[in-house]
Image (cartoon, rainbow, N blue to C red; front, side, top):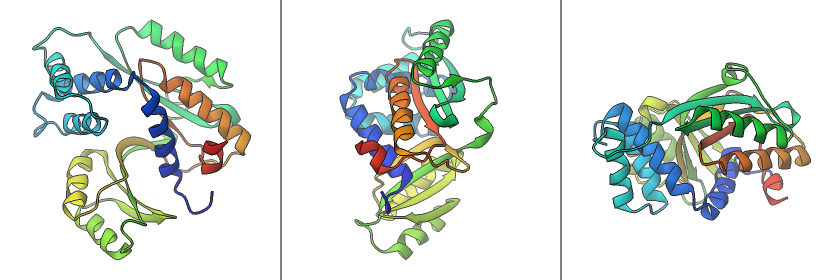
Length: 247
């Protein structure tokens, strides 16, 4: 639908899926564990952990669950030995798909991801086949209807040292270097703007337009992948529209 952001559309779609998924807390707990394992258990010193905790709090994950996941990550409590693996492949219409996973058993995850690609009209590729089409960025989406003063939003983004700020339909999209995400979003919030979405993700350098039927098939593949316990996030360079989501 014209006037709507591609990224806001994906966020709304994911929000609906996440609300139905009892597995969400388990996925977030794994994410917190890996962040704590790699950077320590203090969120003031570990920006990735701070971001993971913010995501967990945003979906009302209990404080005890968060603290337990941190302790498992730092080794204070026994936990699974988790491994981060990124899979690359092609979805319906030949669009690029990146799948980020956390797993305690590589062979299981390899088989599951390959099967899901095959079942939903895609195919798993080799490392490097599509990753060059993406770049890891912080993305902050702000509702333009709620904050109509475009100059004020742009000024806040510049002050926060974001890379870019664009108005796309009814939202502003602010992007920044992934390493600066935590400080940029804090600055944006301090300026009085509450994001509709804020996430570090693999953003495509360019998007590919697909027809509605192909878009529906791509969304089915994304949903199936995200429903897997080991999958943390899925990224595509397909341009997802409101019409595809509604269909």
